[in-house]
Length: 96
Image 1: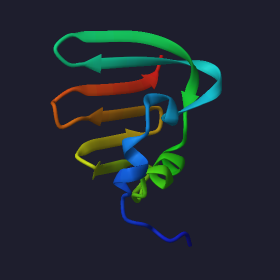
Image 2: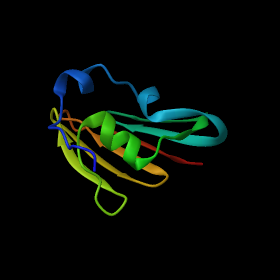
Image 3: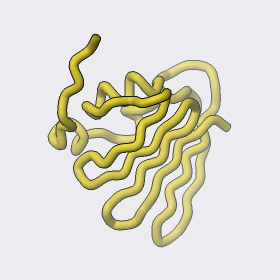
């Protein structure tokens, strides 16, 4: 059984949306909501819930992540990732 480590703000601070994406076949829709809404699509697929949980140092329960890491609310389930920042901006990455 893997050891669950506390969230590491230093690791999370340097992450970008590309940190959650694996190269490969598939299309992802990226939506950023802030003062204005930006949408784009890109090639690739999301990393698994377990991989993201390990990257963030949190525990995945029932194939989902719901945690706050360094002030960022992270919600993830298979095929969908949502980040909500302290500023109120939100970023969603999901299968297109």
